[in-house]
Length: 279
Image (cartoon, rainbow, N blue to C red; front, side, top):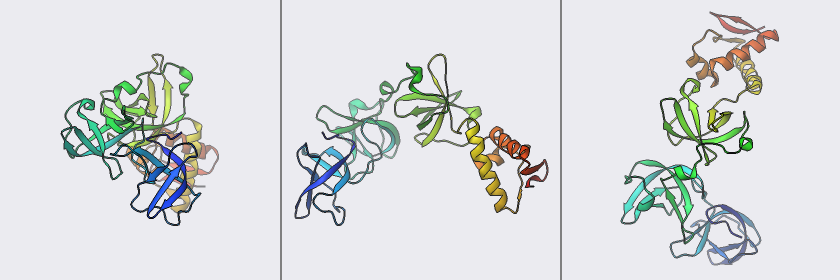
């Protein structure tokens, strides 16, 4: 079965002039719509392709990957408007439609929006800005996530407490201002970690890997940096958080834990003014 709006692995079953046809052994043949098909493509070869329904209602495929697959959320820019809606650049030659009925507010050319890709009643790909109905505010089953688990995030709205982020295209989480040690922007995709599932089911997030594993990874980076700088690094546990983040991309707390571990192993010395040195 073909998964429209997803990446499918299909076999080359027919070549007719410049046209290449694919199938998965079950469904009807699918035209590879790339203007420049892969070189040296032969019968029987397997290709990873994005499958969609073209403007004539026929199945088609491309080796290009869009910025979002079906059921995924992305930050996309409006490139044109017409009487049926707004069209987004999503990395494919054919722009992605947001019908007027799927717009919270009238969209503007040149602006970017958080949207979710979906299949309409005719299996055509479209997008909506009405994403809240697809994202859960809280976790119903605690075992859905565990503390320290790595997740994919998309940055959304800023609040008084921090920055809301979408977790794995399905849940809302919160990055608190006092635990954000790097600038983030709306629509940005990045990895994060589950800090905790609160009693009310809401999810707290951090961008730095929690726990000792992060410290161990950082100690290796600090030792490498010291070796690259003749055994001296002008940072210590008294340095400003901004300087520490600029050098290693971690919080001051994590940095202090790491150099404390190195100090206990008698690998470095620490001086408030001269920084840290290899012993």
